[in-house]
Length: 213
Image (tube, rainbow, N blue to C red; front, side, top):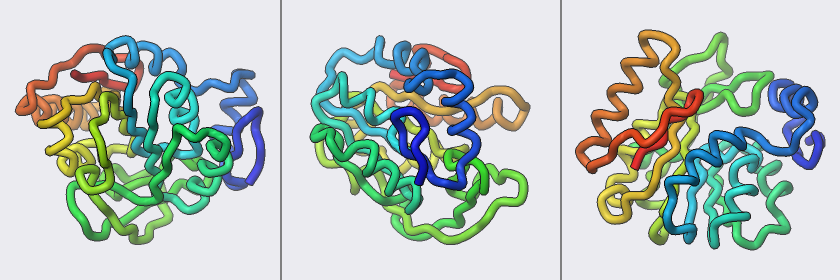
């Protein structure tokens, strides 16, 4: 574990540590977060899926009364605990979330602690293993008003395991959904179409993120 600015990161990570050193800031994706939160009306409860080391969870705790930070990776999770240990508003969950309870193939990028997840969008030469999964409907207790999901191409699978939350609470969603390649554009359309059954529509597109409500 190493410290970059105010954040603790896994020793193996070079991507995020280089980004923070280059930009000389303690805030990650601040503009995206500002746009997303501009659509939120009630700042009671936020959920950060794919919390990594907490670079979203910590600033969310400055606005929301309660934040649940969900991270599957063991090393990332230890960093998340270190970065959030003095913030009572943040509750952490050490689990992967998907469309069902079970197991999934899991990839890891040896240089980027953020590039890992369920084996749907495979990076170059991933380190593969198996990970137990739960669903958001099982993990989350309460009524979230905002959910951020960044899980490297498995966003739809996470949402398919959160149908009760979507139906009952209709939180604002901030989803990583890039639209750079033909394949990404197809995945983006599938995501938007699937959420349409819950009366979701696009509110903003900011960089790789799609904000829906």
